[in-house]
Structure formats: structure tokens, C-alpha cells
Length: 154
Length: 154
View (tube, rainbow over the protein chains, first blue to last red):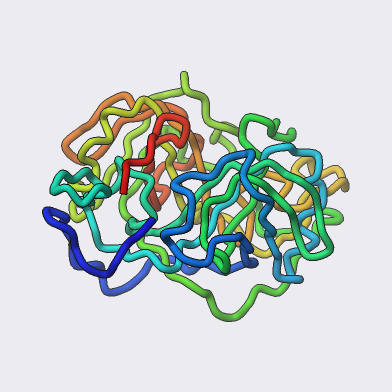
């Protein structure tokens, strides 16, 4: 999504709290074909280009067993997004909607979530289709798709 | 999920990085019927009990327009989960799987994601069905379900 640091007509920003409440660990990096925000697709497609998910070596053992799932939920940190808008105008036409009624990267916690198709494992991580984020986006989590995952007995 | 601070047979922990990479803002609190981890369902159901999502007042304006969606993605912070396991044994039977092949709350970034049915808005937030988390869980994000959301033109 194209997002300058300026506010568009009728968008509403708030003053963010001074302190944050929890800390995220970036567990890897996402490599995609898109190096500028205007080039990113508005939403990923399962027939989109193959992208690479590169894990930090510390977390590679945590992939074991993931290959049994065709669909994986990917959470990532939209590191270029501002966080202070409560109303946004994606079309820049003066009409706004609340941030939680949009899937815009601009949100108090700029976490993107995509459902991707697993193409395969690599020595450093995964290859997948279905992402929409910038090359270099920090990785936050990987989970089996909730529809494919059956909770194991305790 | 029941999770003591002990490691089960064959589970593998790593030493977490000393510093975190980004900060989360807790934007509200989730109220559910479950006050102890053993009581939580293993996965939410759309016909489960009504739960309340209470937004901090700062973020209430960001809800505007959300009522047009029947399904909403909810991200929350699993505040009681440890973060250092790369292999886990949900059944405590000595067999383990990688953390990213599980939807366990125990993960380097303990963010839960649920797809919920919107029951309605309240003065302080939303009522929804489909959650599985503890009462008092901090809220991180709300988004329209990706299947129902059509990106708006830039």
C-alpha cells in the first residue's frame, strides 16, 4: 500500500501511548519480488510468485513437521507502516473508515497476516506462495492453517 | 492449553535473544468465560460462547465500519505462554513436533489468531463468538476476514 507520512483529508491520527506493552522477536526475513510499497499486491494470491521465508538459524528446528500442511498462516511486521491512524481513507477521496474495518498495513500494531501455500522447505526456511509484503519484511510467526490443524490431545 | 514452566520429555528450549526488535501496544482486553488455562477450548468454535472484546477508549473510533463484516480476524497476546521452545510435546508422550507445526500458545512471539463471528457492537467494543483464550487476554489487532474484505482502490 502506498502510504506517505502525511495524513490524507479526513484521516484521524491519535497520540500513541509512550510505552509499549510487550516485545516482539523478529524470527526471520521474508524475501519477495516487491521492493517498493506501490509494487506490492493489495492482497496475496495463492497463485502468486514464490517467495522465500528465511528463518534465523536459532528457530530452524521449530519447522519440523510443518511440511505436512499445505496452507500456513504467516505473521509479519509491517515495518514501514505508521501506527497512529484510527480513521483512514484508502482512496484519498475524503471518505474514511475505521482502521479495524480495513486490512491496511497502517494499524496500532502493524502485523500482517497471510494464508500461504507451502511450496517446499529449503535449508534456511520455506518457499511459499500467497504473500503480499515488501522484500525484507521481518517475520513474526508461522502456524499451520487453523482449518487444517487438529489440536493434539493434552 | 495446560503449560507448566517445566519442560516435558524431549522438548527443546533455546536461549532467547536478549533484546526484542519491536514493541506491541495492547489495545484492549478480551473477556471470556475461561479463567484457567485447562478450561480453555483447544480451538475456538463459531458456535461457542459469546465473548467480549473491550477496546481502550483511544482506539474505539477505529471500529467504525467493522459491523459490515460477519467474520473478523482477532490477534491477541498469549501473556502466560513461554517463548523459548522449538520442539514441543503436546501429548507429553515423548513425541515432539516443531513449534511452527503447532498452534500451541508457546512460540517465540505468542500471538494467537482467531477467526470469529461478529455478534454485535457494544459501547466499549464488540461481542463475538469463536475465541479460545483466557479471560483478560490482551488484544493486539482486529481485521476484517481476508475472505470477506475487498481491498479499496488506492
